[in-house]
Image (spheres, rainbow, N blue to C red):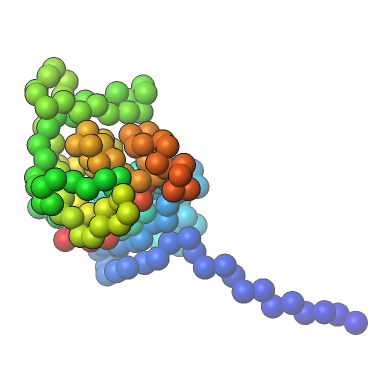
Length: 198
């Protein structure tokens, strides 16, 4: 006798939010790189979708990533991101309560590629570039706070490092955050989600 087993294929580890002939918006899970081996881009290719990432998210940041589906759209989208014509909005949970409840933070950021880390300064220094991070408090919890963040500049680890420098690090952030609070909350990855790209 033969036994026939019908196995349902597991769903892909991402969600397609929007797609047309030129552009693809995908919601990336936490823990997945955008590019490289075993990345979101390589997974899309494996699934028959030839797409190139136009913006990036940290491996442990979840949310929407924009992909171009052809070279013409890629060039146009990269120009839009470069010229800051795109608004990127995030939601995060931070330790403490930012004061005031809404502000545009301005500072300077230095990227140390060897240490895979960035540093924030209130004054301009050699090698530092200007950054702007806008936040608004959305809700308050016991010792934590929900915030919406709008990036006016898009630098490596900008949100994580800038909010930490302001005294309200992202919950779960192992690099710039509060290790004790992260352990107490049982969070090992920053609670940061890219929820809108306009």
